[in-house]
Image (tube, rainbow, N blue to C red; front, side, top):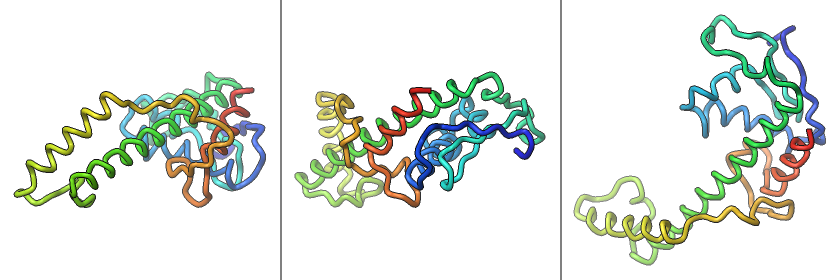
Length: 186
């Protein structure tokens, strides 16, 4: 991104946790939650952040030689809009992960109650297929009647650790919430 880079001062404290959160959003845009989303391609191609900084670097170029057909959405966004975009992605990632954790916890409880080894989530002996399928159907029915509720979970005092927003540092929901609130202020 060389001379085409503009630095978005996020207002976040410059520490490993916040750097990790911002870098993880870029990572999730490219290789994680949104890796198969063509709409998100321009958002990760033209942004970068490493864990050493909690600021966001975006390209000023409209296109580059490899991604010629992908327009740069940051080119038409001001700094406030970019911060809010990242804030909303943080919230979405927290919600996705908490929902995934909830569903995984339900699955573990049902498998344990049905005396089914957790390793059988992905593959299982063919002689056990009916038992595993019946349990999975029970799980699906339970989740339909007891869906994940995000209300009240995205808050500063939530110490649940996140994997989607961290690689090297331990990031909690509370850390993500604080980053979200700061970025939303613009």
